[in-house]
Length: 454
Image (tube, rainbow, N blue to C red; front, top):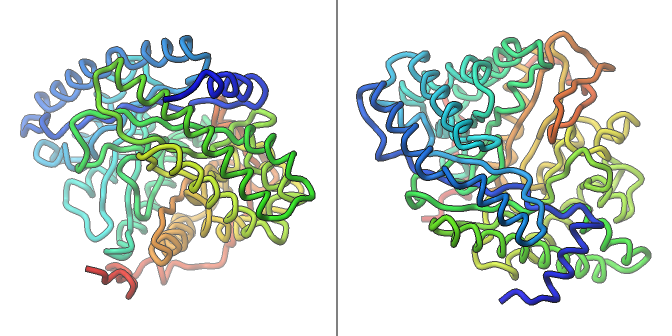
């Protein structure tokens, strides 16, 4: 049971430290919607989403009012559409009709985003999955709340370099089709290695095929709470520092557990997981970068940054798993550039580079996230960056991801404006030396030797 004292302490964290429940995400299986007739398939999808999620937004609002806990986003994730549309979709435009159906259903129930316009191609692509991937630029440029993700590799299967090359091209095309909004379509598109199938955070959320028909996942975030707690650890040793982070993460996760259980009860839907992620926002005091500064760095990117982030990520996970039996998703620390004012400041000061961010992704929860790069960056260079990040995930048996935004018409020194939780970002320089000969090799990079465990 959660005590009154914990509720009072939670209220203080909300009022003073920017604690929030970042998202309640309803995962919906669309496997029973499959039909070889595209029109019937679309109608089945629309009917199921609007039936199961009709009370999702009002439930989130009611919970926020009941407990005084801000519930920032209400979202939906669905079974990867690359699987659902395989029998009905014969061309890329057919898949786009499904994206538009998802968009219409999401707007009907009032959610912020709907994820799952996705393909899982870590070892190879079916014809349908390739069609979906090629449809992504048009799908994202002609919808508002749809998010897309593609899993390109895993520790067990290696890296599908054909898909890596194709995704570099699709990211460029998406940027072009949304160039009048600073290429914002790319902010709704992420590529993964070792993608989790219970992730409530966009743009990478999808409902895994091993999941129940419908579940509730909650993502809770509190970088401001951790930063405030660490003010008491100034000058103390690493043991005190780690214990402080761990205890604070425990308290934050308990909030997520409370909300998840209540949402599950009110909606009559099973509880899935709590994702405890220190996911920043552009708001002052809600920054992972500020936590790293509180640990002892002048700016993220300074020597010691990767070690400090590793410490933070590990203690967050340790605290979280003590607070709930079902911690999952991408739990840990996120380091998106555009959504974190402290990260933006570090880039502008010249302290944080793309190469240092890549090193930090070895120990953070996701990877290269919400990074604006010059619009002139080639598709091959983007694919090369993706391949590097996929390799980090594959070798280290962790989830890694890339969400790059080549902002068409802008170069280093310019700034991209995305608005809302996505914030703004300085255009970061990219190594321009050529990698085309590497990227254009066909096939896949084999799984590492330590993948053979069965």
